[in-house]
Length: 551
Image 1 (tube, rainbow, N blue to C red):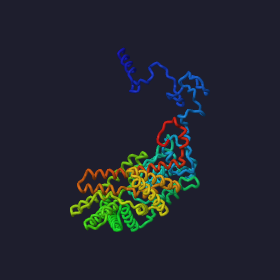
Image 2: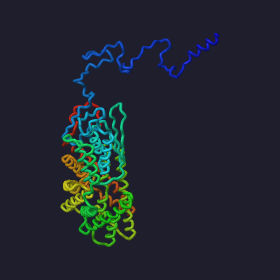
Image 3: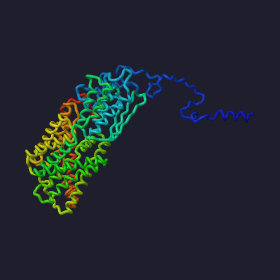
Image 4: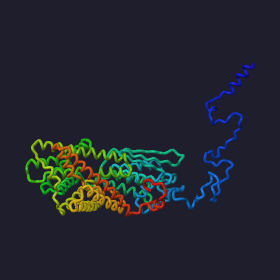
């Protein structure tokens, strides 16, 4: 009997679960006060026995008392109020600047959006708003817009329809957006893949106008109306037919050959070569070949005509024919977008764009090198040194540069109202480059960077004046600055088995291309000195605050 009692007592003292052995379980015999569910159990709660902190500033008698300098009206500069930073978002500012300013803020300090009545009374249709946002972002990204501007447009659309707690994300081929109604609700996410890309700046301008109307305070654009306008934009045909684009490619190559010292015969030879290359590229595209092979094929006809002129021993500048064809193929638009994404912190998208530029550039090199190698086997005797010996003809070169920009704008499918502005911008860029490089003796890389900076500055100011994208005002204007001569010089040296000199020239061409891209971006950022940017004044007052991008 005693043994049984002892056994039973032992079983009663054994822990019944792992929780009973926890170090946080109260010991046996200690009475525990019942815990009220409504009472805070946080470690930040004031312990019992400690007097409540007084609202009046005084000596700090407890660790839980507020500091003596605390005041809701006169807080230190580093203090962040609960409602967020006092950022003034002017309604008259372009939506790009307003949305970019808010995107650079953390979600919890963004200003509360004004009440909008662009959705039904029961609240916004979250799924449809996110879908519209992604479709607009897809058109912008496929048209070559920078990742930061695509995010700003997506945020503007979502915020205009009442979804203020949104986080858009843009990569080279994937768009996604997440909306979290509150801290306790489940987030809603949607994504869309960009599979087709095309250059149509008329469509890009129409999408910008749609985003501007959606985010405008003057009138409300319903979801149905926004979808209808977006469908019209997608259905619209290109403003120029294919034969006009082919003729523009020929004129571009002819103007570029004149820019580097060619005459009348060289002009027509370069134009014919570029038009043949354009038609061959269209044929490859119709057969579904990748863009890499399209560039390989497009680079061959100008190079073949240049080699043929050299073999025929006609007294012309045959190298200018090939150089003019290269001007029509160099991917300056993609390079500017890649560097812009890198400078604004979108490194994944910038890396993908730079990789695309590298592939296209290698395709051009392969097409030209094959033809040059065949020409050398047939007895062609090119003189690489004459490539860089450009005759200075200021008036003719200025006219040729403006024709080049004009035709480049047509190839980019720009609106007719913007073609003349970008042509003038490109002429100013070439005059600046010529004055610095030819007259002033400044090396080509810094001269190119300064001229590209003016392109970016004027292009950004024009775009802000018209509340549109800056791409139509800057991309074509950099055409005369592209390193066509340095590229062809390097390829010619490589074809003659002078690898070290050829690679050095290609590196110089890459440096000029990067100078163009960085100059355009720097000019765009410099334009902010001439505009009122939302939040700039309030940011200057918070000198002691922790600085992040955009503050």
